[in-house]
Image (cartoon, rainbow, N blue to C red; front, side, top):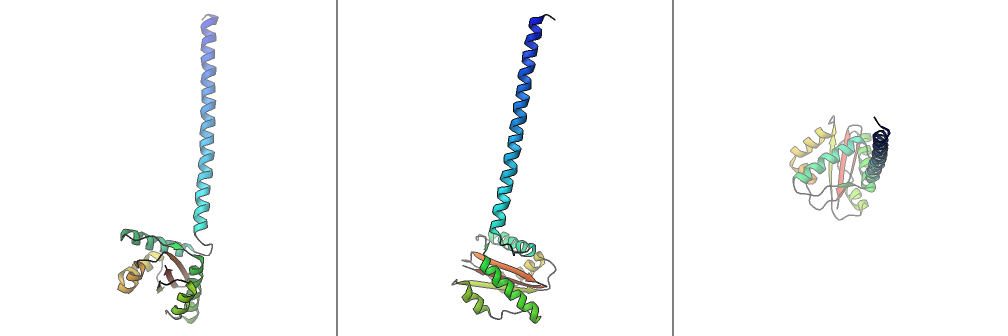
Length: 167
């Protein structure tokens, strides 16, 4: 092979190497941006969920929201004050070992809302079974599908669960 074609071949090879380096840089940049995007989405999701919401509460509200959407209603979002009221009520039921709506009016007044609904439950082994129990009960089902509610608190203490949702 004469020197001229060899030089031409080597120059093409060096262009190829530049393209490969450029492609590697682009792929690396894409991966870095993807990682930061995922981190931002996860941070935003965590901000929407109060720190004291458990996996049980998160799963139960997700199931309720899916059901509401299937019925043409808006999704509910966690509200820290309502989560606190639900936790306090679940704890009181746990202490008294009794399922009840005792002091509902007090929770309603503290919510600052003009519309609130409440479901309580006991002894369901997981949030999906709790949801199904409420769905099969006409009054509980009505509360989950209440039009006008926008925010919620969900809490379980022991086997006692409170779903408290308001406008």
